[in-house]
Image 1: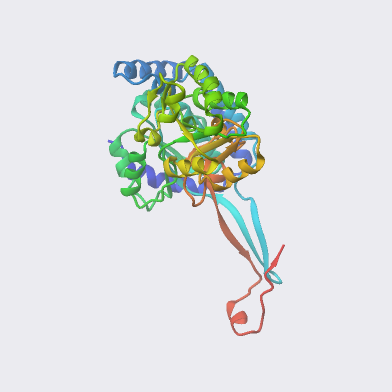
Image 2: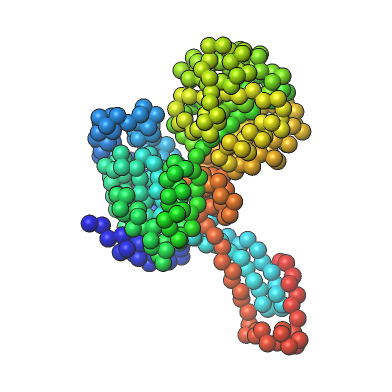
Length: 426
C-alpha cells in the first residue's frame, strides 16, 4: 500500500531544494524529459492501447475515449509544449516591487514557488506531462492523480519523468497517486501540501473543498457561451460558433450554449444550423428558436446549466445584449464566454459585465488555453477570484515573498521618532 504521508513529506523536502534551483538546471531537466519521452514513445503507446481497450470494454463514451488517447500527434504536442516552456523566462525570482523604507533599508517583493501542489485531473495522459512540466519550471513539487482509465499510460509517463530528472532534481519532487483512497489521504495532509488543484465535475470539486483544509484552486463546470449580437457579421459568427463547439467537443472551453440576439435570429439560424448539423451536433432550442427551426428538439431549463462535453448544443434567443449578459451570469460557470459583434461599445459592455475568467470578442472560446495564451501550457483553468484566474500557467503556480535588506536598523528608532520612513518607490 502506498504511504501517502511519506510521499507528501518527501515532496515537501524536495520543494525547498527545487525552489532554489537555477533556470538552467530546470531547463536542463525539461530537455531531458522531452528526449526521454521520444526515446520511450513505443512504451507509452503500448500502455495507452491497453488503457483504451479496457476503457472501450467498459463502455467509456467516445469523447472521453478521445481524451484518453495518447498517440504520435499528442506526443509531438507535449514535446513541443516542453520546448516552448523552456523558451519562457524563469517565473521564480522575478522582482515585482522595490520600495525604499528608509536610506539603506530596501523592501523587495519577489516571486517564488507555491511549494507542494496536489493535482487531480481527468483521464488525459497528456495533462500529466503538461502539469509536471509546469510544476518543474515553476519550482514546485507535485503529487499527481489522474483518472483511473489512464492508469497504465500515467505510470509510464511518470516513470519517464522521474528517471529523466533524477540527476538534476531532488528525489520525490514528483509522485503519482493511483486510487481514491490515496486522494482522500492526501486531502488530510495540510502540513505538507500547499495547494490542491482538482479538475473534474462540479460535484467532485465541491467534494474536494468540503473534505480538506488545504486551499483549493480550479474550476468545476465549463459552461461556456457565445453570444451573437445584432451587430454581428453572421459569417464570422458561424465560423466562431462552429470552432467553439466542434474543434474539440470534450473540453472545458468548448461552447455549450449559443445565445442569439432576436434581431438576427432568423437569418443566423438559417446559416448556423446546417453548419452545425453537418458536424453532427445535436441541437436543442428554446421556444423562439423552434418557431424558426421547427424540427429542432426542445431545450429544457436544465440544459442552460449543463456541460455536455459532447456534440450537443443548447440554443436560446434573447431580446437584448443585457439579457445575454444576465443569462451568462446566471447560468454560466465563470469559465469562458464570447461575443460576436461589430460594435465595439457593445463588446466592451459585454466584456466588462460578464463575470468570467475569460471574456472574448470576435473569437472562439477554444482560445482559453494556457499554451495559446503563451503561458507555457496550463495546469488547469481557475474560476477562483483569489490568486490566479483563467488559464493557470507558470505565473499562476508562483506566489511571492517579501525580502527586506537593511544595515542594522531597529523598529524602536522609528517608533520613538529618531528615524522616519521614506517609503520611496524605486
